Length: 328
Image 1: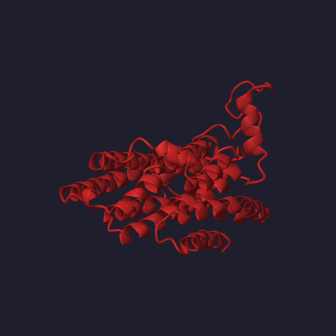
Image 2: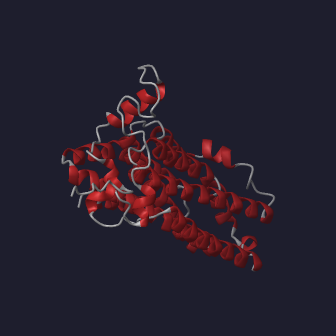
Image 3: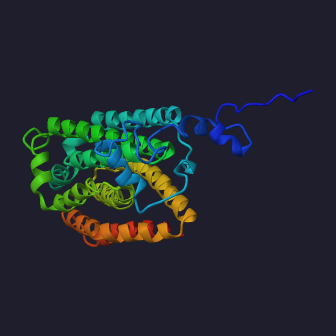
Protein backbone atom coordinates (compact mmCIF):
# COMPACT_ATOMS: atom_id res chain seq x y z
CA UNK A 1 0.00 0.00 0.00
CA UNK A 2 1.30 3.41 -0.93
CA UNK A 3 1.52 5.76 2.00
CA UNK A 4 -0.40 8.98 1.68
CA UNK A 5 1.72 12.11 1.50
CA UNK A 6 0.93 14.61 4.19
CA UNK A 7 0.99 18.15 2.85
CA UNK A 8 2.13 21.20 4.71
CA UNK A 9 -0.48 22.77 6.92
CA UNK A 10 -1.10 26.37 7.84
CA UNK A 11 1.82 28.43 9.20
CA UNK A 12 4.47 26.46 7.31
CA UNK A 13 7.00 29.17 8.16
CA UNK A 14 6.62 28.21 11.81
CA UNK A 15 6.53 24.44 11.27
CA UNK A 16 10.13 23.95 12.39
CA UNK A 17 9.10 24.89 15.94
CA UNK A 18 7.11 21.63 16.12
CA UNK A 19 4.34 23.21 18.15
CA UNK A 20 1.16 25.10 17.54
CA UNK A 21 2.03 28.78 16.94
CA UNK A 22 0.96 31.28 19.55
CA UNK A 23 -1.63 33.93 18.74
CA UNK A 24 1.20 36.47 18.63
CA UNK A 25 3.12 34.43 16.02
CA UNK A 26 0.02 33.86 13.90
CA UNK A 27 -0.92 37.52 13.61
CA UNK A 28 2.53 39.13 13.38
CA UNK A 29 5.02 36.87 11.58
CA UNK A 30 5.81 36.69 7.86
CA UNK A 31 3.00 39.02 6.83
CA UNK A 32 4.76 41.39 4.44
CA UNK A 33 6.09 40.73 0.97
CA UNK A 34 8.56 43.55 0.54
CA UNK A 35 11.53 41.61 1.94
CA UNK A 36 11.14 38.61 -0.40
CA UNK A 37 12.75 39.95 -3.58
CA UNK A 38 15.76 42.22 -3.54
CA UNK A 39 14.92 43.89 -6.85
CA UNK A 40 11.14 43.85 -6.45
CA UNK A 41 10.54 44.75 -2.84
CA UNK A 42 6.95 45.79 -3.52
CA UNK A 43 6.41 43.08 -6.13
CA UNK A 44 6.12 45.69 -8.83
CA UNK A 45 8.04 46.00 -12.07
CA UNK A 46 11.77 45.21 -11.65
CA UNK A 47 12.65 48.20 -13.81
CA UNK A 48 15.77 49.87 -12.36
CA UNK A 49 14.15 53.30 -12.38
CA UNK A 50 11.19 52.31 -10.19
CA UNK A 51 11.75 54.48 -7.13
CA UNK A 52 10.02 52.30 -4.54
CA UNK A 53 12.07 49.23 -5.40
CA UNK A 54 15.30 51.20 -5.54
CA UNK A 55 14.57 52.90 -2.22
CA UNK A 56 13.98 49.63 -0.39
CA UNK A 57 17.00 47.96 -1.97
CA UNK A 58 19.28 50.84 -0.97
CA UNK A 59 17.97 51.55 2.52
CA UNK A 60 17.04 48.04 3.67
CA UNK A 61 18.76 45.26 1.72
CA UNK A 62 22.03 47.23 1.53
CA UNK A 63 21.87 48.60 5.09
CA UNK A 64 25.02 48.11 7.20
CA UNK A 65 22.72 46.43 9.73
CA UNK A 66 22.26 42.87 8.51
CA UNK A 67 20.53 39.64 9.56
CA UNK A 68 19.91 36.41 7.68
CA UNK A 69 16.23 36.28 8.70
CA UNK A 70 14.70 39.39 10.23
CA UNK A 71 11.36 37.58 10.51
CA UNK A 72 12.76 35.61 13.44
CA UNK A 73 12.63 38.71 15.64
CA UNK A 74 10.05 38.56 18.41
CA UNK A 75 8.65 41.41 20.49
CA UNK A 76 9.59 40.71 24.15
CA UNK A 77 6.04 41.68 25.14
CA UNK A 78 4.44 39.54 22.38
CA UNK A 79 2.05 42.45 21.86
CA UNK A 80 -0.85 42.11 19.43
CA UNK A 81 -3.49 44.59 18.35
CA UNK A 82 -6.29 43.13 20.45
CA UNK A 83 -4.23 43.28 23.64
CA UNK A 84 -2.77 46.70 22.79
CA UNK A 85 -6.15 48.36 22.25
CA UNK A 86 -7.64 46.80 25.37
CA UNK A 87 -4.68 47.92 27.49
CA UNK A 88 -4.62 51.44 26.08
CA UNK A 89 -8.38 51.78 26.49
CA UNK A 90 -7.87 51.13 30.19
CA UNK A 91 -5.07 53.69 30.30
CA UNK A 92 -7.25 56.27 28.56
CA UNK A 93 -9.99 55.74 31.14
CA UNK A 94 -7.40 56.36 33.85
CA UNK A 95 -6.26 59.59 32.15
CA UNK A 96 -9.86 60.76 31.75
CA UNK A 97 -10.35 60.17 35.45
CA UNK A 98 -7.27 62.20 36.31
CA UNK A 99 -8.41 65.11 34.17
CA UNK A 100 -11.93 65.08 35.54
CA UNK A 101 -10.72 64.90 39.14
CA UNK A 102 -8.36 67.84 38.73
CA UNK A 103 -10.97 69.88 36.88
CA UNK A 104 -13.38 69.45 39.78
CA UNK A 105 -10.91 70.99 42.22
CA UNK A 106 -9.94 73.88 39.91
CA UNK A 107 -6.39 72.63 39.51
CA UNK A 108 -5.35 74.85 36.59
CA UNK A 109 -6.51 78.05 38.21
CA UNK A 110 -4.21 77.54 41.21
CA UNK A 111 -0.97 77.04 39.25
CA UNK A 112 1.71 79.63 40.13
CA UNK A 113 2.73 82.17 37.44
CA UNK A 114 6.31 80.89 37.15
CA UNK A 115 5.02 77.39 36.44
CA UNK A 116 2.51 78.67 33.90
CA UNK A 117 5.44 80.30 32.08
CA UNK A 118 7.14 76.91 32.01
CA UNK A 119 4.03 75.11 30.75
CA UNK A 120 3.60 77.70 28.03
CA UNK A 121 7.17 77.39 26.78
CA UNK A 122 8.19 73.82 27.59
CA UNK A 123 5.07 71.66 27.81
CA UNK A 124 2.32 72.63 25.37
CA UNK A 125 4.81 72.99 22.45
CA UNK A 126 5.67 69.32 22.97
CA UNK A 127 2.89 68.49 20.55
CA UNK A 128 5.34 69.35 17.79
CA UNK A 129 7.92 67.06 19.32
CA UNK A 130 5.30 64.31 19.54
CA UNK A 131 4.51 64.82 15.86
CA UNK A 132 8.14 64.23 14.89
CA UNK A 133 8.32 61.13 17.07
CA UNK A 134 5.16 59.82 15.42
CA UNK A 135 6.64 60.47 11.99
CA UNK A 136 9.78 58.56 12.96
CA UNK A 137 7.77 55.56 14.12
CA UNK A 138 5.67 55.72 10.94
CA UNK A 139 8.78 55.58 8.76
CA UNK A 140 10.08 52.56 10.65
CA UNK A 141 6.68 50.90 10.25
CA UNK A 142 6.86 51.48 6.50
CA UNK A 143 10.43 50.37 5.87
CA UNK A 144 11.20 47.70 8.50
CA UNK A 145 12.45 44.40 7.01
CA UNK A 146 10.08 42.14 8.99
CA UNK A 147 6.43 42.23 9.97
CA UNK A 148 7.26 41.61 13.63
CA UNK A 149 9.29 44.85 13.61
CA UNK A 150 6.52 46.59 11.69
CA UNK A 151 4.06 45.64 14.44
CA UNK A 152 6.27 47.17 17.12
CA UNK A 153 6.65 50.34 15.06
CA UNK A 154 2.89 50.53 14.60
CA UNK A 155 2.16 50.33 18.31
CA UNK A 156 4.84 52.93 18.98
CA UNK A 157 3.26 55.26 16.44
CA UNK A 158 -0.06 54.80 18.22
CA UNK A 159 1.58 55.72 21.52
CA UNK A 160 3.04 58.90 20.09
CA UNK A 161 -0.29 59.95 18.59
CA UNK A 162 -2.04 59.22 21.87
CA UNK A 163 0.17 61.69 23.69
CA UNK A 164 0.06 64.24 20.91
CA UNK A 165 -3.70 64.29 21.36
CA UNK A 166 -3.47 64.53 25.14
CA UNK A 167 -1.07 67.49 25.00
CA UNK A 168 -3.48 69.25 22.65
CA UNK A 169 -6.31 68.54 25.10
CA UNK A 170 -4.32 69.95 28.01
CA UNK A 171 -3.40 73.00 25.92
CA UNK A 172 -7.07 73.79 25.45
CA UNK A 173 -7.80 73.33 29.16
CA UNK A 174 -4.98 75.70 30.09
CA UNK A 175 -6.20 78.17 27.47
CA UNK A 176 -9.66 78.16 29.05
CA UNK A 177 -8.24 78.62 32.55
CA UNK A 178 -5.78 81.35 31.50
CA UNK A 179 -7.13 83.11 28.39
CA UNK A 180 -4.73 86.04 28.87
CA UNK A 181 -1.72 83.80 28.18
CA UNK A 182 -0.43 82.27 24.94
CA UNK A 183 -1.79 78.77 25.39
CA UNK A 184 -3.10 77.49 22.07
CA UNK A 185 -1.67 80.38 20.05
CA UNK A 186 2.09 80.58 20.62
CA UNK A 187 3.20 76.95 20.59
CA UNK A 188 4.56 77.04 17.06
CA UNK A 189 6.49 80.23 17.77
CA UNK A 190 8.03 78.65 20.87
CA UNK A 191 8.88 75.45 18.96
CA UNK A 192 10.59 77.37 16.16
CA UNK A 193 12.28 80.13 18.18
CA UNK A 194 12.56 79.30 21.88
CA UNK A 195 16.23 78.38 22.57
CA UNK A 196 15.14 75.46 24.77
CA UNK A 197 13.62 73.66 21.77
CA UNK A 198 16.23 74.22 19.09
CA UNK A 199 18.41 71.27 20.06
CA UNK A 200 15.48 68.87 20.00
CA UNK A 201 14.26 70.38 16.72
CA UNK A 202 17.62 69.82 15.06
CA UNK A 203 17.94 66.32 16.49
CA UNK A 204 14.50 65.28 15.25
CA UNK A 205 14.74 66.95 11.85
CA UNK A 206 18.07 65.27 11.17
CA UNK A 207 16.83 61.91 12.46
CA UNK A 208 13.83 62.05 10.14
CA UNK A 209 16.13 62.13 7.12
CA UNK A 210 18.25 59.19 8.26
CA UNK A 211 16.73 56.98 5.58
CA UNK A 212 18.71 53.77 6.12
CA UNK A 213 16.30 51.67 8.14
CA UNK A 214 18.94 50.61 10.66
CA UNK A 215 20.25 54.10 11.22
CA UNK A 216 16.70 55.44 11.45
CA UNK A 217 15.93 52.87 14.16
CA UNK A 218 19.06 53.82 16.11
CA UNK A 219 18.65 57.58 15.64
CA UNK A 220 14.97 57.61 16.65
CA UNK A 221 14.49 54.74 19.10
CA UNK A 222 17.89 54.53 20.76
CA UNK A 223 18.85 58.21 20.85
CA UNK A 224 16.28 60.88 19.94
CA UNK A 225 13.27 59.26 21.59
CA UNK A 226 15.29 58.45 24.71
CA UNK A 227 16.42 62.08 24.93
CA UNK A 228 12.86 63.35 24.42
CA UNK A 229 11.39 60.93 26.95
CA UNK A 230 14.00 61.73 29.58
CA UNK A 231 13.37 65.47 29.24
CA UNK A 232 9.71 64.67 29.89
CA UNK A 233 10.72 62.75 33.01
CA UNK A 234 12.68 65.79 34.17
CA UNK A 235 9.73 68.09 33.42
CA UNK A 236 7.51 65.82 35.54
CA UNK A 237 9.98 65.97 38.40
CA UNK A 238 9.92 69.76 38.24
CA UNK A 239 6.11 69.72 38.08
CA UNK A 240 5.94 68.01 41.46
CA UNK A 241 7.96 70.82 43.01
CA UNK A 242 5.57 73.40 41.54
CA UNK A 243 2.39 71.72 42.82
CA UNK A 244 1.31 70.27 39.48
CA UNK A 245 0.59 66.61 40.23
CA UNK A 246 -1.59 66.39 37.11
CA UNK A 247 1.29 66.91 34.69
CA UNK A 248 3.47 64.58 36.75
CA UNK A 249 0.82 61.82 36.59
CA UNK A 250 0.27 62.31 32.86
CA UNK A 251 4.01 62.06 32.27
CA UNK A 252 4.28 58.93 34.42
CA UNK A 253 1.60 57.28 32.31
CA UNK A 254 3.29 58.31 29.07
CA UNK A 255 6.60 56.94 30.30
CA UNK A 256 4.99 53.49 30.61
CA UNK A 257 4.58 53.55 26.82
CA UNK A 258 8.16 54.77 26.51
CA UNK A 259 9.41 51.85 28.60
CA UNK A 260 7.64 49.41 26.27
CA UNK A 261 9.37 51.03 23.30
CA UNK A 262 12.71 50.61 25.03
CA UNK A 263 12.04 46.93 25.73
CA UNK A 264 11.36 46.00 22.13
CA UNK A 265 14.18 48.24 20.90
CA UNK A 266 16.64 46.54 23.25
CA UNK A 267 15.26 43.19 22.14
CA UNK A 268 15.92 44.05 18.50
CA UNK A 269 19.47 45.15 19.30
CA UNK A 270 20.14 41.86 21.09
CA UNK A 271 18.55 39.90 18.24
CA UNK A 272 20.80 41.34 15.56
CA UNK A 273 24.00 41.56 17.62
CA UNK A 274 23.68 37.94 18.79
CA UNK A 275 23.38 36.87 15.17
CA UNK A 276 26.25 38.94 13.75
CA UNK A 277 29.13 40.29 15.81
CA UNK A 278 29.77 43.08 13.32
CA UNK A 279 26.33 44.57 14.07
CA UNK A 280 27.65 45.66 17.48
CA UNK A 281 30.11 48.07 15.89
CA UNK A 282 27.49 49.32 13.43
CA UNK A 283 25.02 50.17 16.20
CA UNK A 284 27.70 51.62 18.46
CA UNK A 285 28.99 53.88 15.66
CA UNK A 286 25.48 55.18 14.99
CA UNK A 287 24.83 55.82 18.69
CA UNK A 288 28.14 57.68 18.95
CA UNK A 289 27.23 59.72 15.86
CA UNK A 290 23.81 60.80 17.16
CA UNK A 291 24.52 61.20 20.88
CA UNK A 292 26.27 64.63 20.66
CA UNK A 293 23.12 66.14 19.14
CA UNK A 294 21.07 64.53 21.91
CA UNK A 295 23.36 65.91 24.60
CA UNK A 296 23.05 69.40 23.16
CA UNK A 297 19.27 69.05 22.97
CA UNK A 298 18.98 67.84 26.56
CA UNK A 299 21.23 70.59 27.87
CA UNK A 300 19.25 73.36 26.14
CA UNK A 301 15.88 72.03 27.29
CA UNK A 302 16.87 71.40 30.88
CA UNK A 303 18.56 74.80 31.18
CA UNK A 304 15.14 76.40 30.68
CA UNK A 305 13.50 74.45 33.50
CA UNK A 306 13.11 76.36 36.78
CA UNK A 307 15.32 75.03 39.56
CA UNK A 308 17.21 73.10 36.90
CA UNK A 309 20.65 72.83 38.49
CA UNK A 310 22.27 69.51 37.49
CA UNK A 311 19.09 68.29 35.74
CA UNK A 312 20.80 68.04 32.34
CA UNK A 313 23.55 65.91 33.82
CA UNK A 314 20.95 63.57 35.32
CA UNK A 315 19.07 63.24 32.02
CA UNK A 316 22.25 62.58 30.04
CA UNK A 317 23.33 60.01 32.62
CA UNK A 318 20.03 58.14 32.24
CA UNK A 319 20.38 58.12 28.47
CA UNK A 320 23.91 56.80 28.72
CA UNK A 321 22.81 54.13 31.18
CA UNK A 322 20.27 52.90 28.65
CA UNK A 323 22.95 52.78 25.97
CA UNK A 324 25.22 50.75 28.26
CA UNK A 325 22.40 48.32 28.96
CA UNK A 326 22.24 47.55 25.23
CA UNK A 327 25.79 46.19 25.35
CA UNK A 328 25.15 43.57 28.04
